[in-house]
Image (cartoon, rainbow, N blue to C red; front, side, top):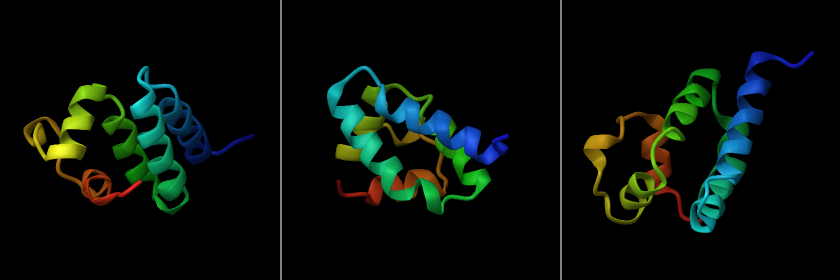
Length: 85
């Protein structure tokens, strides 16, 4: 039986890899692959919530820092904003 944390990780990995746009598939899957094993369960839940955002919102936030009002300020958004793929 898998733990709740492992179930969340599996869900996040899937959601990061199958976004709908190739650019977001690549960006988010690299981000998740690099950091997922370092995140606590609460950070994983923040990441899961982050993945609920539209691709366009995430991309604008990542590239230009715009859409910051649409993105919750937390450890995940901070790490993502600083991430270089």
